[in-house]
Amino acid sequence: MSQAAQLITNGNVSEYWSDHNVTLHKRFSSPEESLAYLAWRNDQYPGYIDLMPVAGHDGKRILDYGCGPGHDLVGFCHHSREAKVVGIDVSFPSLEEAASRLNLHSHFAELVHIGTDTKELPFASKSFDLVHSSGVLHHTPDPVLIMRELHRVLADDGEAQIMVYNYESLWLHLYVAFIKMATEGRYKELDIREAFARTTDGEDCPIARPYRPSEFAAMCEQVGFEVVSIGCAASAWELHLFARRFEAIMNPELRPESRQFLLNLTIDERGIPHHDGLVAGVDLCLRLKKK
Image: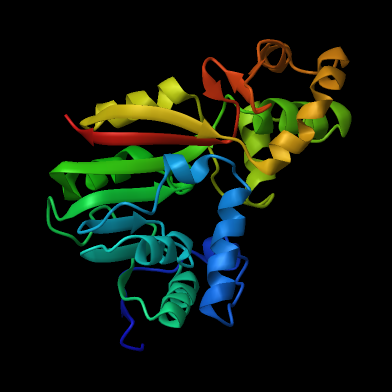
């Protein structure tokens, strides 16, 4: 590895996530191209970057749990003058891509590989000021165990920011329940959560759980976190589909729960739909601190 990235190996490679990482193995030819992609990717989820910021973390020791090919690592290194950045992931190829992208920017990060069965993170207790995990815990077999470890390695005055999939979203109630199930007739034999899992990260994705905000908040509190704030962001795809909500409501094949979800939506001044005071989008984002 070059001096810009240090790679530590530990455990076995997850084959699925090696084949299906978030950038689809995209390689970048310049820092400008990399930063343009960073901005484009975040713009696909309006409001997401405000809920899961990579800027404003000067002087912090940062852990990106499930860093994949380094999208947010680049964001932290470019937008914050952090004291230390560590990325951890189950996919060795994704970590190699993260190293390559960081090297392009001449940024340093420690990259750590773990197995999917790793029960204890290879870090001392209270060793990070910010724990960041975006779109990862909903793919794990035991998210509570992982959150206990994230709580352990977080400093007493530190903060965590976590994004998981939102059950109360247009993705689940409009895209999955209406378009996939009621209209296309797919996955009708499946529970809505299992049908959701087939539509997010590839049909063969082993685990992809959506959580209600209260459900995931309770899980966080179970391991010793206090919920500071909850917010959601909708994908551009969900907002594109939003115009079909009345078509969905009129379809007798739509699940009653999903019909009521669509009927109860409110719209803010930007035209963004909300449900129970939160944006009705697939990204459920929580800011946490230790109790």
